[in-house]
Length: 508
Image (cartoon, rainbow, N blue to C red; front, side):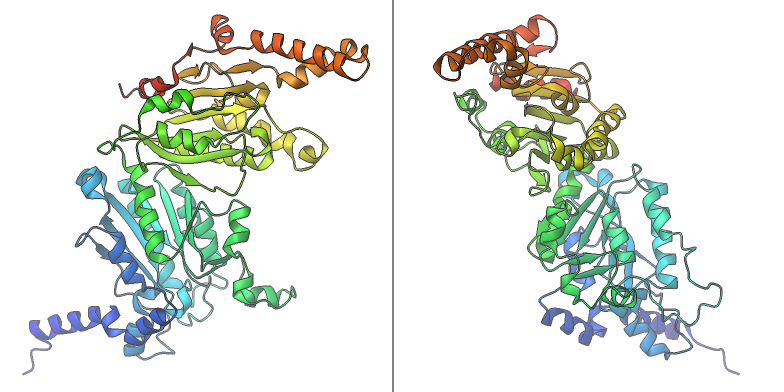
């Protein structure tokens, strides 16, 4: 009498079923990816994680299409239902095993164009639940075409709009760091997941849009090639991408690098000679300079990673380290609009404050600004709503904050960059070149002494009076005077800035 399948048969079946999900069994799909210059989802996975650390969830899932495909086709062509999910460790050599655990979801474009099906969503929900329960940072690769209409086995819903994946992903906000990575086409639901990440990384071959070509055409909005929808240059200019990568390998390296700032302190890298900071600013107070040079000297070597460099350019936002301790940086760039904070720069600064709050990072502000950008054009962009929102955002930040004024600290804009008040930071310091006032000195002279200036004819006499009044106002607004009136905590030698930061973030 037959005893049914043996243990050996069960083992063979398990091994074959598992093997069908891997690249070796899916050679045609792998070769198609390689022919485009792209990597497979599992190749990205192996490059991302510490070797041998991955525990895969739902590997044997297939698309809900059993009534339209044979079992072999389901296992190979719809392997893992288009998304690889699980847990692993990343950067354990830097931050130690106890701080290196992460959760992952890597979309597989070679499976039904990376579309989101019934079991696919169940896999996402499961790994989101694990990440929330165990407080695991999350990295997601999002390449794919959005919702999938071809899951014919699903008999229990109409439109599937009761899916909980998007709300669960959003529910991780502020609970765990979330990094999204994209290469290639990313539309509809995939784009929604990408855009909701804390840090968004995209390759130059990415096209990311809230609808793909079929949906756009179906809505009567025209016919477009996928490459025309959400090209990265457009998205970078709009601030929708934090880091632009050359290719998947570069994007993966960036994801690991950025994740490290959320994982905690590491062994410090050497820092540049801090005496350089004494002479790094131009002698002429009206001359612009690149604040990135200041940052490269001030922070640990090779530790500064700038986010969204072509968006909101009056403010530089970055992640960096001081003696191995991770910090979020908000710095004025006086080469753009003289450092005046326009609407885009205000949004960018506010979102960096929010990131610091979510990732529990101290903030370091390096300030040199004449204040908020004003005028009818600025107001037409919503300045009266966007700029005040900086104060709301800063008020909710509960991590240490160090404000260092490199030069100008004028008006509400300067206050906003240090949390809404010069008293908000843990330490508010200034370099000796610091100058302060309710508004830019030149504007203050023209406004405050309008009658006196108008009483003189245009020419040398009026110019001489203007320069005299400007010099007097500058003397009154010097950093040493501001410190004497207790509007700032201290004036420091620029070479002492690292020590002040470490004290302010309570690491010394």
